[in-house]
Amino acid sequence: MRRAPACLLVLSVAASCFAVSCGKGPAEVTAQSTPLPRANMVVSPRAYVSLQPVPRGRTFELALVAKIRPGFHINAHEVLEDYLIPTALEAELPAGFRALETVYPPGVLRKLRFSATQLSVYEDSVTLRMKLQAQPDAPLGPNKVPLTLRYQACNDEACLPPVKLPVTAEFEIAPAGAAARPANPDIFAAPPRPKTSSPQRNARGTVARIECTRADVIWESAMADDPALGGV
Image 1 (cartoon, rainbow, N blue to C red):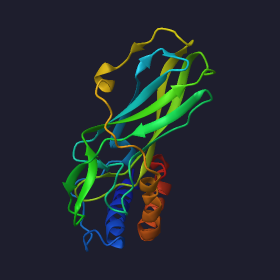
Image 2 (image 1 turned 60 degrees about the horizontal axis):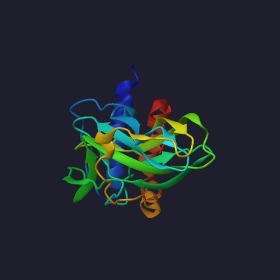
Image 3 (image 1 turned 135 degrees about the vertical axis):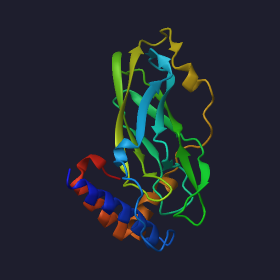
Image 4 (image 1 turned 120 degrees about the vertical axis):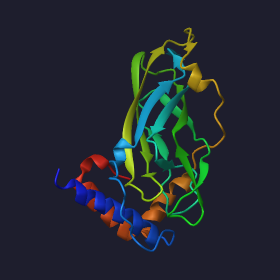
């Protein structure tokens, strides 16, 4: 408990150093008026499936609904500045499943204190959707797909270290031609908006690590003190 204030101070300095080293932030480090939460506590994710059961050979969707702590936002998938780390959804697919695409909604534009220009962010709640296909040899019965949500959370004054959160999607695989009913219609009724994953955008995280070496060193030190923060 006695180490927590030092860690919070390090995170605050990291955010300012991160912005200054990229030439985008304030020239001075300002103290936070309230303690910052841990990075892995800012977002609460939950996974949903579009069909139950999923017949072999059928295409279906997974949706990850991420609820964001009030007063914070996370970077959108399509970031507007090279030093920002985009939100990304990854899946560790077991045998018998094929990924078709991942769909990200557009962010909202916000002007924050540490940026000279507007940034594209997600706030309040965001839904990320992944389209999969159950192959003819998909294992029958209960199945799980491990998902990983990567994000960086910020408020109007500072950014927390990037973090990865594990989430599990659970569903049932049925024989080909079996009857299937739509599941979670409130989430999957609206068609996904056409913002798909982009390797070029995902590579921006690498650019940020090169340009912001000082901030990375501070982040790594903070995460060494608190392994629960996760990695980039």
